[in-house]
Length: 228
Image (cartoon, rainbow, N blue to C red; front, side, top):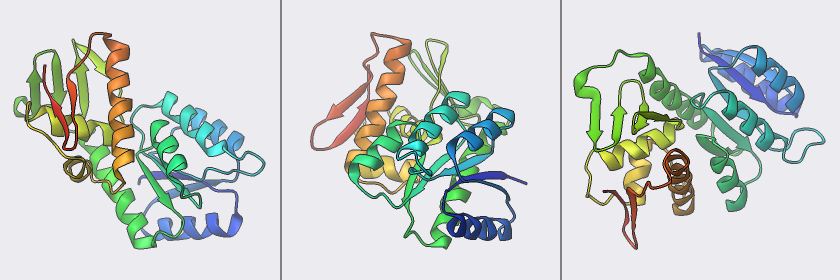
């Protein structure tokens, strides 16, 4: 049974989500503040975390919690579920490593679908590696089954959304992928600026591993492509 942690300081909202998720077969733990959630995560990581941004007296407590959780695990799926719908907050959340950003007016069926999609992608990591699942482009190696990316034999820690974006680019080097293409590959629905933020964050991760990295090219007005 998949374990979901939901961090939401409004009791009625938290209990409603817990009830719905349990009815869909998930094991759910609820927390109303960042310190309690963080303590629980340090003892045992959830399989997926749903986090509000404002937590009690911490206006941006959810952002801090996301950063802490992402430092503990580069792959655990994280969803922001919040009333804050500004582009600034959305971009901040995704830059901090969240895989999805939803506002609280999202329908429950849509929320359940997003959770299921993230679990499907995460589950691929547990499947055995087969040669046909490997992509090798120069210094880049991608193991599709395990959702792992290596640059010069060093693993690059990517979120599931970031992984699918790199996979989409690298499987057809030299071909331009529009932002809509990358959204479809990553199974996310966000605006163009959010896709741009994802790409910048991925570039930064590669550069941290290799300062000479320059394989993700921006094709202005069209999108991105992978090339040497």
